[in-house]
Length: 228
Image (tube, rainbow, N blue to C red; front, top):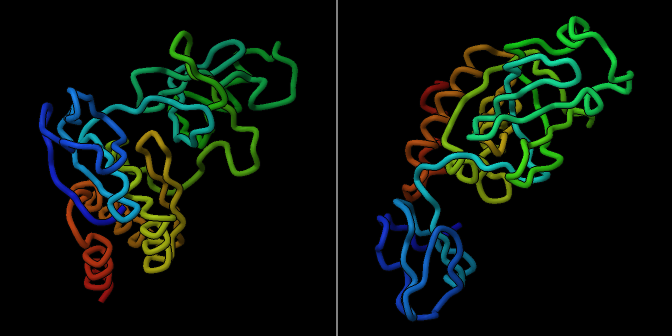
């Protein structure tokens, strides 16, 4: 995103005439587009698109989302997973292993136990039943090391940056790998513990200053100052 950035509260005017396409948390009154939430108005495509992004909010799962979850219960044929959402997710044994679903509960806990963190993908969700996860893809599964940072799910796009630019900046300067879950959990993995910790601090800084101008430059200078 680039261009206009301004804070709005519920009811504030976003646009009074159809000068640009408006997306996000808005409603229409006659020709006026107003904000539903406390948020920030972002302008993109040379001003052709405006988007109202809430400053606070909860993660609502969507099919295909990459998420970081925490095992909260081991069942007989599945695990219950906290995905930082109003909805608890389910991870069926069929989405973990090709073994028969009659595996004893004690054996399930040997695969994933309460408190374990996983990198997973949402395979289905329609609000009438719990989100279903999979860890069958090669890059998914139990998280064995690194730091998980929690941020507001609404700030995920800012942490990622345009075409991944912010993540690339952090990875290059701090020599870490970063995986951003759409549910507001960010995994940082590096070979140097202090750089992992610095990356976590920087991610929280990005969350706190997500609505400000020139954030990429600020982050770059902040990291360079901390590394000297």
